[in-house]
Length: 415
Image (cartoon, rainbow, N blue to C red; front, side, top):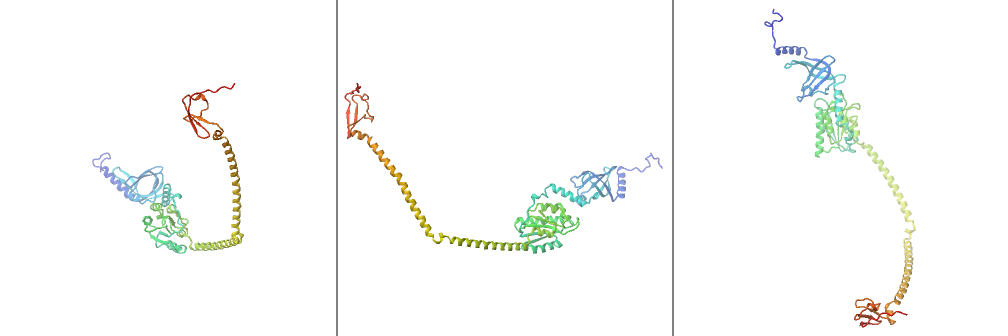
């Protein structure tokens, strides 16, 4: 036997061979095991894999969730989250690292579905999917209703029977989909989009859309908690009523929809008026209208009889003659009132004309006076303003004289 320190006869392994043997031992020994720990150093590269570490107070182990498993996770792992993971130990030979290849993961202390639901609810709430301000009102009298549900479930039968009793005038379009299991959420979302597309093209005018199913467990109702369904409801141009499960079941589709019905039957009750109640109300309104009309007609007849009994209608010409007589009186008063100022004005005018006549230059000339003017029309008042040789025009009572100045004699002052 060779000494411990002599390698000549020893079985010398290469690093690769040693790593391969370690890998074989670990992977054979730990093919499936459950590990609990706190998530840290979580990373999501473009490959779709998830890399993380699981740690407790004393140790840390690397872990990986490969793309196929990661795509099917119901919730999103985050740093600081305590989880329980099932997987196998694998060795990455280029670095000599061992890690836990996770195949199943559960949140510690809460179910995976509950956690996934809470995470999706928080994410959609942050995006405004639950905002009441964006929700559309339901039609008052829907003519066409689309039901997106299972065609074989009890829920669709209950809805159709109730609709036939409450509002039989509505047209119903049943869009069959799976309401649970793999692929159900995608079918529901696609059906919502197809109905909206037909509505937008005008081929099928839909007033409201009901999405729902009967009761069940959280797993049974999970299709209505998927983000793809929430996106389809959020993007719908048609008002959406969500009717999933029982009153205690609240799904993501209930929160995103324009109206949440407690049950599928409540969806019909909330969406449609009651035909019998409407007919009874119309009959009551008709009775009230007839009563009011009869009363108004009776009042009108009484008023008409009272008006017809008035003197003006019994002797209509008397009123006219009174008005004619009053008109004649007013005409006479107007004439008298208008004539008095006119007479006064005539008298004043005559007095003024007499005064003007007495002051008229023509009358003054008739008493032997004359009026002398220069050829340009200026009146000659002073002899000093004339010069020998000037031509003067003298106006007499009758005719005019044209003369030439021979001599100018100044006025003599009175002693």
